[in-house]
Length: 137
Figure 1 (cartoon, rainbow, N blue to C red):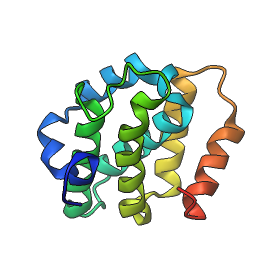
Figure 2: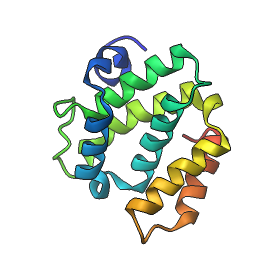
Figure 3: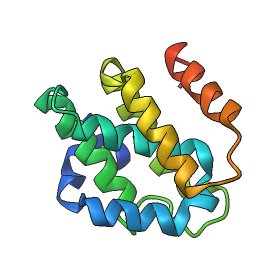
């Protein structure tokens, strides 16, 4: 994943921290949408899983570091388009590490969403999971 922008996500690893990730999610969760937050949480839990290969953890750290970074190709403050580049990096990462997304990881991510969003519709999460499984994402 070399080149400019979110395609070269390894260079953003230094921007990753757990506290930075949760701070960013808290600031942007409603703007970014349930889908983006769920995908980020999936990556977070894959990163924390001891069975995830180190090369996949490296890719995840880069994608999450890019997500956290306040200055990126499209500033997050731009309505609608501000998270497009962040989401592109997250989706590319999901595709790369998809084999590591277990049912237990999906459950943890869904539970965290339920903790944060009391009004979440679980059908939305199920649809995101179907999209991941069918490689629509």
